[in-house]
Length: 394
Image 1: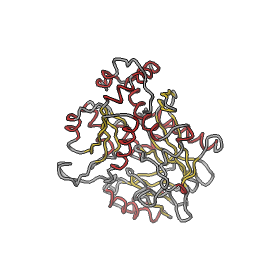
Image 2 (image 1 turned 90 degrees about the vertical axis):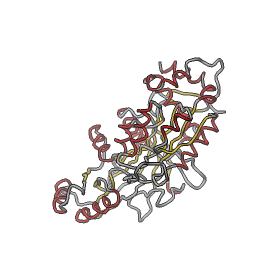
Image 3 (image 1 turned 135 degrees about the horizontal axis):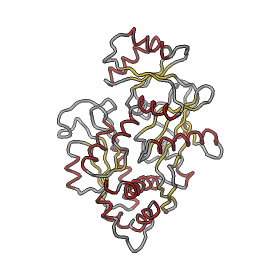
Image 4 (image 1 turned 135 degrees about the vertical axis):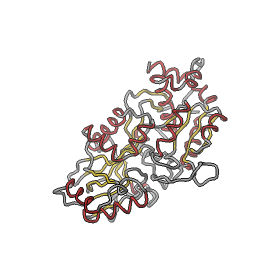
């Protein structure tokens, strides 16, 4: 079935280019008139990622897809999908507002019956909820820093909060990281030298995000990241079944002397000199350890689109998972600004268009093979085989 559907896509690629109607979804602006019924808040952030959606749209059009539009995730999304007769969406949104905002767009599309490139609602929520994801890592036997979660809206007593910290981290005399359980780009992440300062920091973060706060042991070693996508790849203009998720773009994120954590692009631009690209045949040990964890997470959580896993070593060099980013930055890299996900594509004879094409065709192949009832329009579109194959790159 895998091989026959791969061939089915290959033979129908011209038809997909000409007829497939794709909507790339970016985060809505809750402050824009007509975008929401009532304006509330988003604990994650209000960033729309529209500029990244522009890159994805441009890439799809460069590849040869003729019917690609960009739409915001707001109250008009459903009607826009109907009006434009959309066949498949690409979710490049972290949500518009409300709790669990990463889950809203996939939930809406599931209800409407529109397939999408993106995580299922459950997996989007699990990956974005750092404390829940870390609990999954523990059950998998994957190393992650010891952690504790607080909800200051419930825990009113500073004394009791400090007592919980003392009990959980008994015998530990190092420093800590305090951060929101849901968030992006290292925002509101604090390095805290002593447990006595943790309660005030927890309340500070909660006062900004109005959400739960996680405290974990600070890992003093090197910081790394690696990306992972599904097994159906576009490489050298050919559709290739890798038969297992592909882990790629292993990098070390260089810390300045005054940095305790790798700061986000919102604080400091991720320039080329801040990242060292690792090579699987040179940095074999760290590469293999990260790749094994990435592919395990992808397979065991049954993920359906790309992730970036962030790692940090302790003072002895043991690598731990910090978190998995459910919506890794897919902005096209430039001469001055690197993309952590795209950094290692040339090592696998791939470029930005190959990555975008791989993610789209992997989702289509997965739907045809395992969930055809979830994508009746796609199945109908690919029912008849085109007489001549088309190169994957126009």
